[in-house]
Length: 348
Image 1 (tube, rainbow, N blue to C red):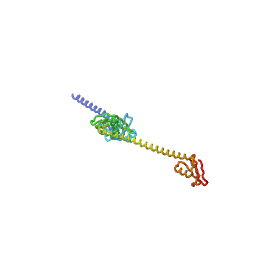
Image 2: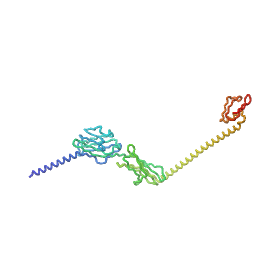
Image 3: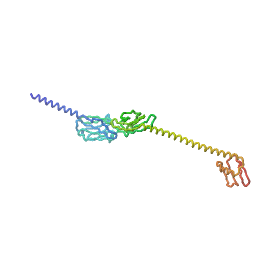
Image 4: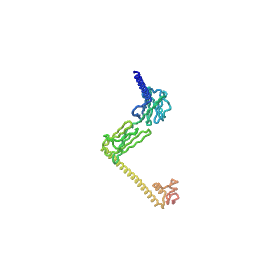
Protein backbone atom coordinates (compact mmCIF):
# COMPACT_ATOMS: atom_id res chain seq x y z
CA UNK A 1 0.00 0.00 0.00
CA UNK A 2 3.03 2.32 0.51
CA UNK A 3 4.63 1.86 -2.91
CA UNK A 4 2.21 4.10 -4.84
CA UNK A 5 2.72 6.94 -2.35
CA UNK A 6 6.49 6.66 -2.66
CA UNK A 7 6.24 6.55 -6.43
CA UNK A 8 4.06 9.65 -6.50
CA UNK A 9 6.50 11.49 -4.22
CA UNK A 10 9.48 10.60 -6.40
CA UNK A 11 7.69 11.80 -9.50
CA UNK A 12 6.79 15.09 -7.84
CA UNK A 13 10.41 15.70 -6.89
CA UNK A 14 11.58 15.02 -10.41
CA UNK A 15 9.07 17.52 -11.78
CA UNK A 16 10.32 20.20 -9.40
CA UNK A 17 13.94 19.55 -10.39
CA UNK A 18 13.15 19.72 -14.09
CA UNK A 19 11.17 22.92 -13.58
CA UNK A 20 14.06 24.54 -11.72
CA UNK A 21 16.51 23.47 -14.42
CA UNK A 22 14.30 24.97 -17.13
CA UNK A 23 14.01 28.21 -15.13
CA UNK A 24 17.78 28.41 -14.65
CA UNK A 25 18.37 27.69 -18.32
CA UNK A 26 16.01 30.47 -19.39
CA UNK A 27 17.55 32.93 -16.89
CA UNK A 28 21.06 32.33 -18.23
CA UNK A 29 20.11 33.95 -21.53
CA UNK A 30 18.96 37.21 -19.97
CA UNK A 31 21.03 40.37 -20.17
CA UNK A 32 19.97 43.28 -17.94
CA UNK A 33 20.97 46.93 -17.69
CA UNK A 34 20.66 49.32 -14.73
CA UNK A 35 17.35 51.11 -14.35
CA UNK A 36 17.20 54.84 -14.46
CA UNK A 37 18.13 57.64 -16.83
CA UNK A 38 21.69 57.52 -18.15
CA UNK A 39 23.10 61.07 -18.50
CA UNK A 40 26.61 62.25 -19.34
CA UNK A 41 28.01 65.79 -19.54
CA UNK A 42 29.73 67.21 -22.57
CA UNK A 43 33.46 66.69 -22.10
CA UNK A 44 32.88 64.22 -19.28
CA UNK A 45 32.60 60.43 -19.05
CA UNK A 46 29.77 57.97 -19.72
CA UNK A 47 29.55 54.47 -18.18
CA UNK A 48 27.53 51.85 -20.10
CA UNK A 49 26.96 48.81 -17.87
CA UNK A 50 25.22 45.48 -18.42
CA UNK A 51 25.24 42.04 -16.77
CA UNK A 52 23.97 38.49 -16.92
CA UNK A 53 21.05 37.44 -14.77
CA UNK A 54 21.34 35.30 -12.78
CA UNK A 55 25.01 36.21 -12.20
CA UNK A 56 27.57 33.90 -13.75
CA UNK A 57 30.99 34.20 -15.32
CA UNK A 58 31.22 35.83 -18.74
CA UNK A 59 34.99 35.55 -19.20
CA UNK A 60 34.63 33.01 -22.00
CA UNK A 61 31.91 34.99 -23.80
CA UNK A 62 31.92 37.56 -26.54
CA UNK A 63 30.75 40.99 -25.39
CA UNK A 64 29.77 43.63 -27.93
CA UNK A 65 28.52 47.22 -27.69
CA UNK A 66 26.98 48.91 -30.67
CA UNK A 67 24.98 52.06 -31.22
CA UNK A 68 21.74 52.71 -33.05
CA UNK A 69 20.65 50.12 -35.59
CA UNK A 70 23.49 47.64 -34.87
CA UNK A 71 25.58 49.05 -37.72
CA UNK A 72 27.99 51.18 -35.65
CA UNK A 73 30.33 49.12 -33.49
CA UNK A 74 31.60 50.79 -30.34
CA UNK A 75 33.62 48.01 -28.67
CA UNK A 76 34.17 44.26 -29.14
CA UNK A 77 35.60 41.91 -26.50
CA UNK A 78 36.41 38.38 -27.64
CA UNK A 79 38.75 35.62 -26.48
CA UNK A 80 39.82 37.52 -23.36
CA UNK A 81 40.93 40.76 -25.06
CA UNK A 82 39.75 43.69 -27.19
CA UNK A 83 39.38 43.15 -30.93
CA UNK A 84 40.97 46.10 -32.71
CA UNK A 85 39.75 47.51 -35.99
CA UNK A 86 36.07 46.89 -35.32
CA UNK A 87 35.10 50.11 -33.57
CA UNK A 88 33.85 53.14 -35.48
CA UNK A 89 36.52 55.83 -35.99
CA UNK A 90 34.85 58.31 -33.62
CA UNK A 91 35.24 55.87 -30.71
CA UNK A 92 38.87 54.88 -31.27
CA UNK A 93 41.06 55.71 -28.22
CA UNK A 94 38.03 56.97 -26.31
CA UNK A 95 36.72 53.74 -24.77
CA UNK A 96 37.76 51.75 -21.71
CA UNK A 97 36.57 48.20 -20.92
CA UNK A 98 36.06 47.51 -17.21
CA UNK A 99 36.03 43.74 -16.51
CA UNK A 100 36.82 43.45 -12.80
CA UNK A 101 33.34 42.01 -12.15
CA UNK A 102 33.28 39.81 -15.27
CA UNK A 103 33.37 36.67 -13.09
CA UNK A 104 29.88 37.68 -11.93
CA UNK A 105 28.69 38.49 -15.43
CA UNK A 106 28.94 42.27 -15.09
CA UNK A 107 30.89 44.49 -17.51
CA UNK A 108 31.12 48.26 -18.09
CA UNK A 109 32.24 50.30 -21.07
CA UNK A 110 33.43 53.84 -20.37
CA UNK A 111 33.38 56.53 -23.05
CA UNK A 112 35.74 59.43 -22.37
CA UNK A 113 35.47 63.03 -23.58
CA UNK A 114 31.78 62.74 -24.34
CA UNK A 115 30.44 64.86 -27.18
CA UNK A 116 26.88 65.69 -28.19
CA UNK A 117 27.06 63.17 -31.04
CA UNK A 118 27.59 60.35 -28.49
CA UNK A 119 24.02 60.64 -27.30
CA UNK A 120 21.46 58.07 -28.42
CA UNK A 121 20.52 54.37 -28.05
CA UNK A 122 23.14 51.68 -27.30
CA UNK A 123 22.91 47.88 -27.02
CA UNK A 124 25.03 45.46 -25.01
CA UNK A 125 25.26 41.88 -26.31
CA UNK A 126 26.54 38.64 -24.69
CA UNK A 127 27.19 35.68 -26.94
CA UNK A 128 28.31 32.10 -26.30
CA UNK A 129 28.11 28.78 -28.10
CA UNK A 130 24.68 27.89 -26.67
CA UNK A 131 22.99 31.30 -26.15
CA UNK A 132 22.92 34.94 -27.15
CA UNK A 133 21.09 37.90 -25.66
CA UNK A 134 21.23 41.69 -25.65
CA UNK A 135 19.77 44.65 -23.77
CA UNK A 136 19.38 48.29 -24.74
CA UNK A 137 19.94 51.60 -23.00
CA UNK A 138 19.75 55.27 -23.95
CA UNK A 139 22.49 57.81 -23.30
CA UNK A 140 21.49 61.46 -22.92
CA UNK A 141 24.14 64.14 -23.24
CA UNK A 142 23.72 67.46 -21.46
CA UNK A 143 25.67 70.70 -21.13
CA UNK A 144 25.17 73.33 -18.45
CA UNK A 145 25.34 76.83 -19.88
CA UNK A 146 27.86 79.54 -19.15
CA UNK A 147 27.19 82.64 -17.10
CA UNK A 148 23.84 84.31 -17.71
CA UNK A 149 24.00 88.07 -18.33
CA UNK A 150 21.38 90.81 -18.34
CA UNK A 151 21.88 94.00 -20.38
CA UNK A 152 19.79 97.19 -20.36
CA UNK A 153 19.50 98.62 -23.86
CA UNK A 154 18.94 102.23 -24.92
CA UNK A 155 15.47 103.30 -23.76
CA UNK A 156 12.65 103.57 -26.26
CA UNK A 157 9.54 105.70 -26.10
CA UNK A 158 7.55 102.90 -24.43
CA UNK A 159 10.07 102.06 -21.69
CA UNK A 160 13.29 100.13 -21.13
CA UNK A 161 14.37 97.09 -23.13
CA UNK A 162 16.10 94.44 -20.99
CA UNK A 163 18.00 91.59 -22.69
CA UNK A 164 19.14 88.26 -21.22
CA UNK A 165 21.90 86.20 -22.87
CA UNK A 166 23.12 82.70 -22.00
CA UNK A 167 25.15 80.23 -24.07
CA UNK A 168 26.70 76.77 -23.96
CA UNK A 169 23.52 74.74 -23.31
CA UNK A 170 22.42 71.34 -24.55
CA UNK A 171 19.73 70.41 -25.26
CA UNK A 172 17.82 73.64 -25.84
CA UNK A 173 17.03 75.01 -22.38
CA UNK A 174 13.86 76.46 -20.97
CA UNK A 175 14.20 80.25 -20.72
CA UNK A 176 11.75 82.74 -19.19
CA UNK A 177 11.40 85.99 -17.25
CA UNK A 178 10.09 85.86 -13.68
CA UNK A 179 9.22 88.48 -11.10
CA UNK A 180 10.18 88.54 -7.42
CA UNK A 181 7.24 86.23 -6.62
CA UNK A 182 8.37 83.61 -9.15
CA UNK A 183 5.57 84.37 -11.59
CA UNK A 184 6.33 84.15 -15.29
CA UNK A 185 6.45 87.45 -17.19
CA UNK A 186 5.69 87.21 -20.94
CA UNK A 187 8.79 87.97 -22.98
CA UNK A 188 8.94 90.43 -25.87
CA UNK A 189 11.13 88.23 -28.06
CA UNK A 190 13.16 85.03 -27.83
CA UNK A 191 15.72 83.52 -30.21
CA UNK A 192 18.51 80.97 -30.25
CA UNK A 193 21.46 79.81 -32.33
CA UNK A 194 23.80 76.79 -32.39
CA UNK A 195 27.58 76.85 -32.78
CA UNK A 196 29.84 74.30 -34.43
CA UNK A 197 29.70 72.05 -31.35
CA UNK A 198 25.85 72.11 -31.50
CA UNK A 199 25.63 74.06 -28.23
CA UNK A 200 22.66 76.42 -27.86
CA UNK A 201 23.02 80.17 -27.32
CA UNK A 202 19.84 81.84 -26.07
CA UNK A 203 18.65 85.46 -26.17
CA UNK A 204 15.46 86.87 -24.68
CA UNK A 205 14.18 90.44 -24.35
CA UNK A 206 11.58 92.19 -22.21
CA UNK A 207 10.03 95.64 -22.53
CA UNK A 208 9.62 97.27 -19.11
CA UNK A 209 6.94 99.94 -18.78
CA UNK A 210 7.33 101.89 -15.53
CA UNK A 211 8.17 98.80 -13.48
CA UNK A 212 9.97 99.18 -10.15
CA UNK A 213 10.15 95.53 -9.11
CA UNK A 214 12.92 92.96 -9.40
CA UNK A 215 13.01 90.79 -12.51
CA UNK A 216 14.87 87.51 -12.98
CA UNK A 217 16.16 85.65 -16.04
CA UNK A 218 15.60 81.93 -15.47
CA UNK A 219 17.32 79.25 -17.61
CA UNK A 220 16.93 75.50 -16.99
CA UNK A 221 18.33 72.33 -18.60
CA UNK A 222 15.36 70.01 -19.34
CA UNK A 223 17.47 66.83 -18.98
CA UNK A 224 19.34 67.42 -15.74
CA UNK A 225 17.03 69.98 -14.16
CA UNK A 226 19.99 72.27 -13.48
CA UNK A 227 19.19 75.96 -13.67
CA UNK A 228 20.76 79.39 -13.59
CA UNK A 229 19.14 82.59 -12.36
CA UNK A 230 20.20 86.20 -12.72
CA UNK A 231 18.24 89.12 -11.25
CA UNK A 232 18.19 92.87 -11.75
CA UNK A 233 16.32 95.68 -10.00
CA UNK A 234 15.27 98.75 -11.99
CA UNK A 235 13.49 101.37 -9.88
CA UNK A 236 11.13 103.86 -11.47
CA UNK A 237 13.37 106.77 -10.40
CA UNK A 238 16.33 105.08 -12.01
CA UNK A 239 14.43 104.67 -15.25
CA UNK A 240 13.42 108.36 -15.19
CA UNK A 241 17.00 109.42 -14.53
CA UNK A 242 18.19 107.22 -17.37
CA UNK A 243 15.64 108.79 -19.72
CA UNK A 244 16.79 112.27 -18.63
CA UNK A 245 20.42 111.37 -19.27
CA UNK A 246 19.57 110.12 -22.73
CA UNK A 247 17.66 113.32 -23.55
CA UNK A 248 20.58 115.43 -22.25
CA UNK A 249 23.04 113.48 -24.39
CA UNK A 250 20.81 113.98 -27.43
CA UNK A 251 20.64 117.75 -26.80
CA UNK A 252 24.43 117.92 -26.42
CA UNK A 253 24.81 116.05 -29.69
CA UNK A 254 22.47 118.55 -31.42
CA UNK A 255 24.41 121.54 -30.05
CA UNK A 256 27.69 120.01 -31.18
CA UNK A 257 26.34 119.66 -34.71
CA UNK A 258 25.24 123.32 -34.75
CA UNK A 259 28.61 124.58 -33.48
CA UNK A 260 30.45 122.49 -36.03
CA UNK A 261 28.30 123.86 -38.84
CA UNK A 262 28.80 127.49 -37.75
CA UNK A 263 32.58 127.00 -37.51
CA UNK A 264 32.68 125.52 -40.99
CA UNK A 265 30.68 128.40 -42.49
CA UNK A 266 32.91 130.93 -40.70
CA UNK A 267 36.07 129.43 -42.14
CA UNK A 268 34.50 129.21 -45.58
CA UNK A 269 33.38 132.83 -45.69
CA UNK A 270 36.72 134.03 -44.27
CA UNK A 271 38.57 132.32 -47.10
CA UNK A 272 36.07 133.66 -49.62
CA UNK A 273 36.38 137.27 -48.40
CA UNK A 274 40.19 137.04 -48.38
CA UNK A 275 40.16 135.79 -51.93
CA UNK A 276 37.87 138.62 -53.06
CA UNK A 277 40.08 141.24 -51.40
CA UNK A 278 43.18 139.79 -53.03
CA UNK A 279 41.49 139.69 -56.42
CA UNK A 280 40.39 143.32 -56.03
CA UNK A 281 43.92 144.48 -55.24
CA UNK A 282 45.35 142.63 -58.22
CA UNK A 283 42.70 144.16 -60.47
CA UNK A 284 43.50 147.69 -59.23
CA UNK A 285 47.22 147.16 -59.84
CA UNK A 286 46.57 146.05 -63.39
CA UNK A 287 44.32 149.02 -63.92
CA UNK A 288 46.99 151.48 -62.76
CA UNK A 289 49.54 149.83 -64.98
CA UNK A 290 47.29 150.05 -67.99
CA UNK A 291 46.75 153.77 -67.34
CA UNK A 292 50.41 154.37 -68.05
CA UNK A 293 50.79 151.87 -70.84
CA UNK A 294 50.99 154.60 -73.46
CA UNK A 295 53.39 156.73 -71.47
CA UNK A 296 57.17 156.64 -71.56
CA UNK A 297 58.67 154.67 -68.68
CA UNK A 298 62.21 155.05 -67.55
CA UNK A 299 64.23 152.09 -66.39
CA UNK A 300 64.20 153.08 -62.67
CA UNK A 301 60.42 153.49 -62.78
CA UNK A 302 59.94 150.02 -64.26
CA UNK A 303 62.21 148.50 -61.61
CA UNK A 304 60.28 150.19 -58.79
CA UNK A 305 57.00 149.11 -60.30
CA UNK A 306 58.00 145.50 -60.70
CA UNK A 307 59.28 145.30 -57.14
CA UNK A 308 55.75 145.94 -55.98
CA UNK A 309 54.16 143.83 -58.78
CA UNK A 310 55.99 140.52 -58.88
CA UNK A 311 53.38 139.06 -61.21
CA UNK A 312 55.07 140.87 -64.15
CA UNK A 313 58.26 139.46 -65.54
CA UNK A 314 61.40 141.53 -66.06
CA UNK A 315 64.50 140.05 -67.58
CA UNK A 316 67.70 142.14 -67.55
CA UNK A 317 70.84 140.97 -69.25
CA UNK A 318 72.97 143.66 -67.66
CA UNK A 319 73.08 145.05 -64.14
CA UNK A 320 74.02 148.65 -65.05
CA UNK A 321 71.10 150.92 -65.88
CA UNK A 322 73.29 152.91 -68.32
CA UNK A 323 73.27 150.06 -70.81
CA UNK A 324 70.09 148.08 -70.20
CA UNK A 325 68.56 145.41 -72.31
CA UNK A 326 65.06 145.02 -70.95
CA UNK A 327 62.25 142.60 -71.77
CA UNK A 328 58.97 143.45 -70.12
CA UNK A 329 55.92 141.25 -70.53
CA UNK A 330 53.33 144.03 -70.24
CA UNK A 331 51.40 144.42 -73.49
CA UNK A 332 51.21 147.96 -74.83
CA UNK A 333 53.91 149.34 -72.50
CA UNK A 334 56.36 151.85 -73.98
CA UNK A 335 59.70 151.42 -72.24
CA UNK A 336 62.30 154.21 -72.30
CA UNK A 337 65.83 153.34 -71.30
CA UNK A 338 68.36 156.02 -70.38
CA UNK A 339 71.73 155.12 -71.92
CA UNK A 340 74.95 156.74 -73.07
CA UNK A 341 73.59 157.51 -76.48
CA UNK A 342 70.44 159.25 -75.15
CA UNK A 343 67.05 157.93 -74.45
CA UNK A 344 65.38 155.23 -76.48
CA UNK A 345 61.76 154.23 -76.23
CA UNK A 346 60.62 150.80 -77.32
CA UNK A 347 57.06 149.67 -77.54
CA UNK A 348 56.32 146.14 -76.44
